[in-house]
Image 1 (cartoon, one colour):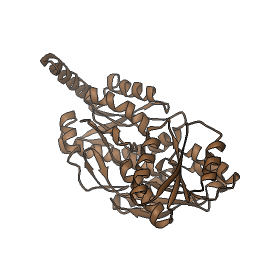
Image 2 (cartoon, one colour):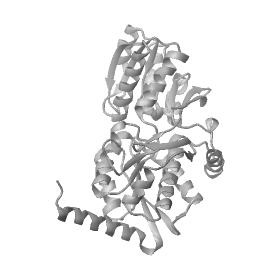
Image 3 (cartoon, helix red, strand yellow):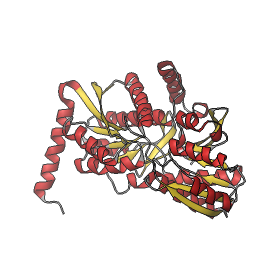
Image 4 (tube, helix red, strand yellow):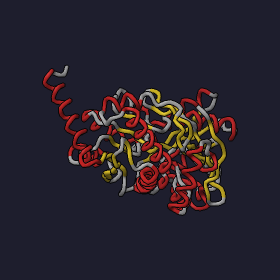
Length: 372
C-alpha cells in the first residue's frame, strides 16, 4: 500500500510537471522513437507523420504544441532512459511512443510510475497496456492481427499446414506467432514446424532446410523487414516456393530493397494503405503527406498522426493537461475518424480494421481490409 505521504508526493510531482509543461504558453509532448539503430526507419517515418500532424494542428487549449524527440536507439534500456529524460528533464504532459512492442514494454512502466499518459502508435503486443492506467495505443493488438493472418492463410491461400519462423528476441514476433498458431489450429490447420532466430542473424539456412523437409503449405514469418527479406532470399535460393506471410513490421520499403525478387508474392497484415482509406481525414492525410514528402505514407506515419490527434482531442475535451482528466477522456474515445480508419479505445486498445497487402511488381499492393 502507498502511504498518505507517498500519495501526496505523487500528486505534487504531477502538478509540478503539468505546470512546467505549460510554462511560456507551450504544451510539451514527448516523442520516444527509434531515430537510430535497426528500427530507425520506423522512427523516421513516424516522425514525418507527427510533424505533419503538428502542421495541421499546431495548438491545443490555445497553446502551441512542442514535440520533444528522444531517440531510444532501437534499444529497450535506451527506451526507458529516453522516457525518463523527457518526463523529468523536459516535463512533458504526455508521451507518444515507443513504436516497437519491446521498446514500448520498456517505456510503459516509466510513464505509469510518473503518472504521464502514453500513447503508442504501433506497439501491438497485448502486454503493453495490460493492467496499466496511463498507457494506451491507437493500433490493433496481436490477437486480432494473428487471427486475420490465420483466416487469410486458410480461406484465401488455401493453406492447411504451416511453418512458423519466430524472432525470439522480439516480444512482438513471439506474441503474434503464438496468436497465429492458436487461430490457425482452431480453423483445423496444422503447424508442421517452428524454428527460431534472433534479430541481426544473417544465416537462416538451417531453419529453412528443416522447413523444406517438413513441406508446409505456407511459411509464416512475422518478423522485421531486414530478417524477413534475408529469409525470403535464402528460402528461394534453397528452392522453397511456398507463399511467405508476415505481419505489420514488414511494411517498409527496405523489405523490397533488400529482398528484391525474392519477396515478390509475400503477403502481410498491417494497419494502413492509401488505397484502403475509408475516412475523409485519411484522404486528407494521404494528399498532404504526398505533397509534403513526395512519397506514399506507411502505417507508422499514419498511426503516429492518429496518436497525436487522439491525444490532442482528449486534452481538448478535458480542458486541461491534468493527467487524470486526460486519461479519463482517452478512455472515452469512441468512433474517432482516424486516418487509419474509425477507431475506438476499449481497455486502452484500439478496435479498428486491419489491412492485407501483397508485394507485387516491386511495390506493396492493397489486397483487402478486414474489419474487427
